[in-house]
Length: 568
Image (cartoon, rainbow, N blue to C red):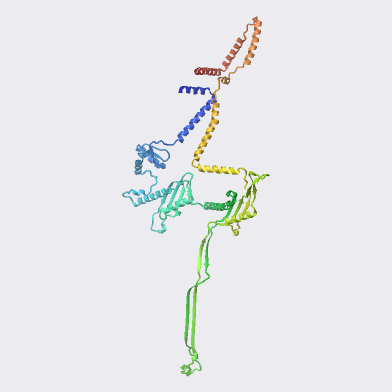
């Protein structure tokens, strides 16, 4: 193939196009080149190995500047593909990391208890304490960064000096600054987990002394009452919906087996919950008393009653009782018995903690389909795909209602309510075929799950191919349609009207005949010569008025003549 001839033909074809066609061709070519370049540059896999490997990634601006300064000082070639990443030759990466570590770089990177791997001679107790705090902060920050939503974490721990005065002793405090990944955030449980992690890593650090903020300075884990109430309301609503769905599924599963399928039943259950958690204390006294202790006391005494001395004062009364005057009836006896029994009163104390949610009322609305029988014509022949709807009887609805009540745990004391209705689930001719088609499509999608992206992109490619064939190609053919020589001539602004020329020639011919007759000349007038002279005169006038158009016309005629001769 002669490349030079092909290029000349393309250039010649391009020159024959008018201005709008040339603009379309140039614009289309630029668009095609841009699309191909985009696909090559951005879609091609990056397999080129330039010999560089990351030295450090996710560096701060300060550490990156110090490391770059050291690399330039050592005259080591490096690259910075992204912000915070420095790349060097792969054979130098390991050695450079060790050299940078000896220089203490990067300084703002997190260090753990590896600080104590190297013992420093002459280090004071204060230095060791500072290193311990740094190691603790770095170790906790590394642990927090293992959470998926956390991109970076910085932990600061303040440990107060110990004092002998207990009243002046302060508790340790800690602050955590978190930078989240794009589009992610921590849940309340994760924030609480970070607090417990920090508090458990530092001695005598309480949860109240751990403060967490994000990169915007917004405190985390210290929601106000409104936020807490909103979270509680969301949890309660989620709990209510889940419970209602469980009840609905139970009703549909129960009735669907008897009515011909789950699509024959529609159930909606509404449950009213009491989310107030009530704690109560109960004391119960046992009426059957049990003796705890018993005490008995018995006293007995026997003797004579003392004589009573009386009478007329004298010798006898002063002497006392006279012998031989005793009386046995004066003997005295004393007896006393006491019994005490102490009973134990048994008491039972129970603390009853209320449930998270108690059901106050349950209402259920159930709609069931009826029965269908094939429809027959007048002759008794079955009409395809046409059925007669037969509603359920009251007895059947009553039994269905009883089943629903048993399923949802109907309790009249809670004012529960169950409503069962019978409606026609309209089945139009052809609906079964549609359902079968949809099921078939769903089965195909399930089977072609791993290959579905390939099929999708293939379908898009086919659409683009048909669009190219049916729209772009016909449009390009119309725009690239080169006009013939006969079609180019009318495009010029120079036009000759043969009728006008003939009219002018007739007028001039008549005028000249008159002049020649007056002068005595004969019929020596040549009409063809006269037309030629008039046409020449007209062309001269047009050439003077429209010089550029005439020149362009001549150039086009010459080029066409040259191309015709070359093709021959």
